[in-house]
Structures are given as C-alpha cells and as structure tokens.
Image 1 (cartoon, rainbow, N blue to C red):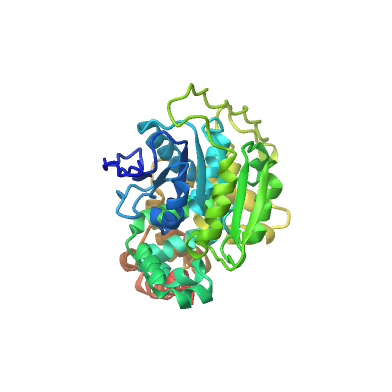
Image 2 (cartoon, rainbow, N blue to C red):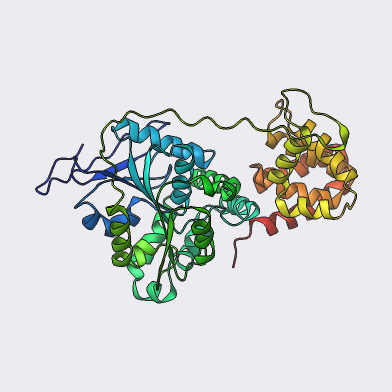
Length: 428
C-alpha cells in the first residue's frame, strides 16, 4: 500500500494469487474507476503519459499481464480466463462497476467483459483492437518461434510493429524501453497469450455489446489497423471511430496527447455512479445450444459432443487451418476427410488417456516406420505446436531408428530438420 500524496492520489501494487493480476492504482479513492490494460509484450507503463490527466477525475487501475513487468508467471488459457482474473482482482479491491480501456490483447479482454459481464462495464475504449486477431496459424507459429528461440525475435521486430519509422528514428530511448519490455517477459506466458489469441473470435457476438465504445486506432497500424477498427464500429451499436494520425500500434505511447484527449472526452460522459460495492445481478444465462446433426447420418450419442465437430476443431488446433483447409479442398466429396476427422481426430486424438505431446511422439514414430515423408513433415510442425522442442524431435528420430531401421531414421532426420527450420525461423 502506497502513501497518499498531496493531490490525494494513491498507488498500490498487489501481491497476486493464481486467480488475480498484478495491479497499480493511481488517483483519488472517491473518484469513479477507470481500468486500463496493456498489449501483449508491454506493461502498465505503456499508459504512463495518460495518467496525469486522467487521474484528475478518475481512480485509474492498471494491470499487468501474467509474466509481464515482473508479474508472477502464471499463464492463462484463454482471453475469458484473463478476464475472470481481472474481475477477481477488482473484487479484491472493492471495484464493481468501471470504465475500461484496453490495448490489443487487453482490448480483447474488454470485448469479453462487455459480453460476459455487461453489468460491470460502464463504457469501453478499444485501442488497436480487433474482434479476431490475424489467423490462428499465425499466432500458433509465433508461439513455436518463442518456444524455440526465446523472445529475442519478438523483441527485434517490436519497434517496426509498434511505432512508425519517423517516431522510432526520433525516439531511440523509447524504442529501447519497448524492446526491454519484451525481453523481460516470461516466454511461457507470452506463448500462452499467443495460444489464447489464436482462438479468440467474437465477430458474431459484437451486436450483443450494449455499452458505449470508443474504437481508437493509429492511422499507420499494420497489426490491427483501421480496417479491423471499422469492423468493430460496424458491429457494436453504440461505437464511434477515432483514427490517430501519425501513430502505429502503440498509439498511447507514440501520440500521447491525442490519445489522452480522446479517452478523457469519451469517458467524461460515461462515468459509473460509484466505484464501491454495488448490487450485482447474476451473469446472464447463456441460451441452450442447439444440437448440430452428425454428418453422414451417424447420430451423436446423447450428451456427447459430435466427434466430427470435436475432431475438426482439434485437427485445426494441431495441424493448422491452412493444412486442414487444403486437405478438405483436395477431397471434393468429403468422404475420406470426414472419416479421418471423425475417427482419427474426434475419436482417438480427443481421448483423455494421453496428452497431445505423447500422441505426437507416437504419431511421429509410426510415420517414420511407415516412411510417410509428407505426413511426417506435417506432424513435425504439429509436434512443435504441441510443445515438443527441436531437441526432443531429434531424440525421437534417433530412438525410432533403433526399432524402425537406420535408413528410415536417416530420411526422417532430413524431413524433420527441414520442417523445424521452416516452422521456427523468425520472420526476416
């Protein structure tokens, strides 16, 4: 607990549990609450330039993502889980209703909270945010690169992803600061965030968001740019667009005055009535999902997920959307791909008896024994996504050679090495 200062602003830094987040509070205790969250690879300090102005009228709660900024390295499995940890943190400090501003990944958290806990969120500012971030394959490959090479490749590319060339050239100290934020992030938490973003998609749910939203984007943002911002504005009933000239992905850092003015104007008319405890209604009950008929006339058992749909989702997670889409396109009548998806992925890969890493080891060994080179390359990439390292893959090939034959292992080494290089080489 920090001490009050002359202007009645206070600050606190938490000791977090596995269910809460590291946070900081600035501003007068009696003021309405504004929660602010950072993008992947950054810390709450990305909002430093906004704090002097916003804390005149708001008690600002900033949080760090797990494993960022010295926060405990406790990975999360989904954007919704991160949102639940944030709500638990706010419950811990007595905040029930709040305004919310989030950048990129934290913007996704804001969308999630507006959908699942609309009684908590008074208004939204979505900075450099999208209802769907890139493709699942892009984020899963980013996770593979970090598992293999650490965060240095992400640190090297951060300046060009986050800032315009003009700003980066004029502000080398800020660029160095940004790079250090990435380098000091926990790799496991970074990978977990990539996995969470790979499956995040609220495009079809935007119409259910009923709070006022400011969608703010840098005009030069090449990560989540104006096109993604317009998708949000088109989908959210009470949303307006603000494009900040001369800014890229981290607009609050690059154009702090413009972003501060836009945030202050937006939140001025949407302050929650109180920052204290409110009578909170229960979360709305989700509608009962309608059962999807099983393909090929083979009904799913009552109460059991359809193995085809379950298998298709798992197959995409393990092999990637691009691979699965191509396989489906190469089978015009769909019969063979349905068989593979239903039984190999929906029935066998989905069984709880072995984890995905172990199933990858078994699959690679069988493919080496059978000499199936193309499938071996595909499943090498899948094994990397399932958490196996290049060193472990080489050990698998070596071990398989003892039982499958050295000629098979020699061929497999070349196939595996090529697939590993393709999958783990950072972008130029």
